[in-house]
Image (tube, rainbow, N blue to C red; front, side, top):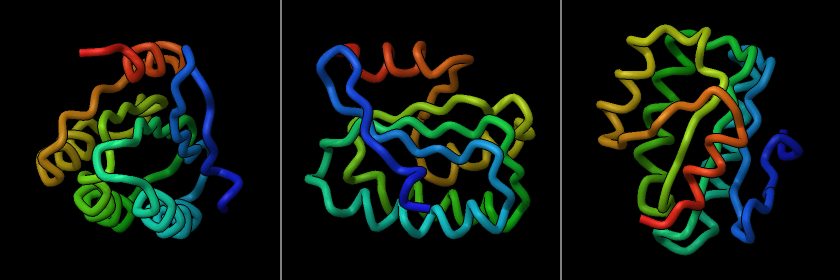
Length: 121
């Protein structure tokens, strides 16, 4: 599962890419544990993260665990974005954002998400 967590460089900045693509719920739960460990090794407020859910299958257990991990990794993440969420019920997305108290935008493509992530505020 660790191969699904990688770093890509975009416009000179490193982005942690978390590839949930085509994962079943059980795989996502395993991957979320690896994400939690990987994120916590970084300095607070330092990470740019991109979660790609293209073709992923989420159920209530996954959404519940996602919410928990999003709260736990919040101190380490400077900016986060999501792609491939078209098949995820909107109520799940809103629930995750509300519970984690994070505004995480969604994008149609990785490129658009990465452009937003590296943009200076």
